[in-house]
Length: 245
Image (cartoon, rainbow, N blue to C red):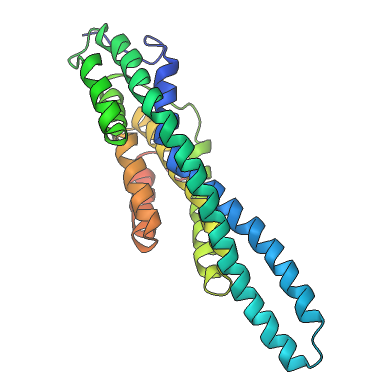
């Protein structure tokens, strides 16, 4: 069996599937932007109203209530943006995911591999369980078709995302608007881990499957504390095999 790389199987459909895989992180970033923008606008309005109060104590109380109201308004604004885009993404996936799976599986099946994906089967799976089909297909593809990342840049992106996540979660205890910062850190962390896992896989004896680490990174980061533990694990394994800097 020959060694097959992404250059042997050039496929825009494959990259399209990766974009759908990363879709939840894009929604997270937009959610974060929505929270920050709406929150800042709401704070500006509440600050203007608080400035008009006569007594200092009343002004302080008004400012505190305004901050809470701004955070709640920001959260609702962010949710509205995410829901609208999620609907659009869901409608696109009904057609695009089965099509991309069919096109890429056809190319991979033509290679001399132990894995011969059935294009027809993946079309059916892509239509009925698109998310699971994309996860399974990309997991298997990474096992048999060599992809690569030629730079450690994505590791620094993951670290930046982890830092933003921690700052955002801690800051949200003081002002809910800081939750937007954490939401902006999530895509940086997860996408960075996904791409860096490919780099580590190619340059060390540790062979993490990028899809596994994308999924674990996403789910654990949402739960915050498991995300910190997972990042510590990934950093330890990476340090053991290729270093951290």
